[in-house]
Image 1 (cartoon, each protein chain N blue to C red):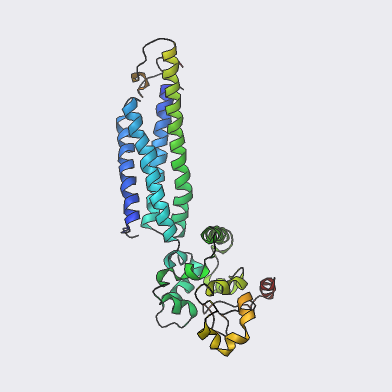
Image 2: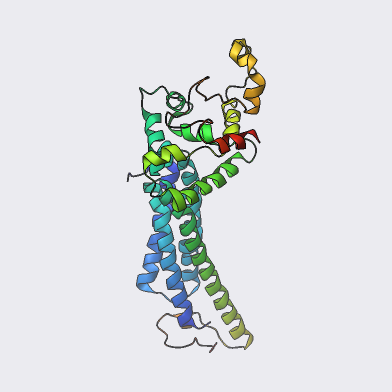
Length: 92
Length: 219
């Protein structure tokens, strides 16, 4: 997975997680039927999705590092910076 | 909207605030994806939100037992108001004045008991939400009073018997109790009927209203 896409996915995950946290907090301030149901359904779904996205990014990044190490080159974690314009240093 | 004071709610809010701080910091600074960033994001996207969700869910489940939760659907407002009415003599209001029921009196009388009682009750609650959204959302209260009835009225005596066991000698001293013991235990005679202890809610139609439901109750 290209590092730019990784960072995009992480940014989306962060926004989803913030929305999930907002919904889960809403039910605590307003403990009535719809806030509670939405917090426990939509909130949980968004939170789970954001964590899955994070796990995917971490797995993809680990795979990138492992493949690069297997090729024998020095692998820096730096190429995964978000401002890279294209693919990461290993070209995957 | 009120600020929650329950310890679990405060814990959930604290964890959510910490997670939000990490996530906003990430979104603003966009650091490179090094090990430290991954660990911070594990906290912000995983550990802290999971903790917040867990604490929030437990608090949410507790909130679903409260009368104000049940009364948040407009068709239940008359029942909730009756329960809160200190001058009401309905069964619901009398039980609500009992500190063991208190603000959870709807749940105490309508929850299913038994090993999977909570699960069954929550599943039934989701059916209530579905029916509310699809059928009763725009139903005027006056019409709702006439049309909303218990799905399984024959089961209600079982809930009364969680406290009033029907085994107690004092209870059995009452001749009406003795004479209708079998019917009460099987739900054929409702404790909350006009001839016995009165309707649980003043607006409830009771088993006499829709004949098809009375028939269902016999099955």
